[in-house]
Image 1 (cartoon, rainbow, N blue to C red):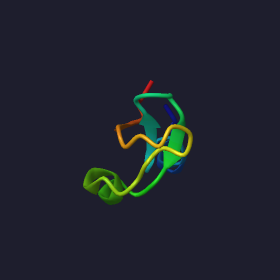
Image 2 (tube, rainbow, N blue to C red):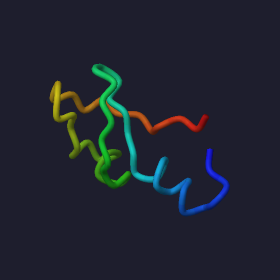
Image 3 (cartoon, helix red, strand yellow):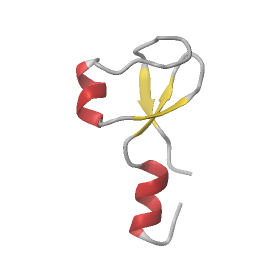
Length: 53
């Protein structure tokens, strides 16, 4: 994605995508794995990491 580590962190680190409505959420991965983070739009807790292109 990016040539620099800082750029890759901006685009990929701590960014999750809702599996239901496809909205992006920035949250710590520990809270997502514990199920404490939910989607702002649809209130779902089904999140996945953003894929590298």
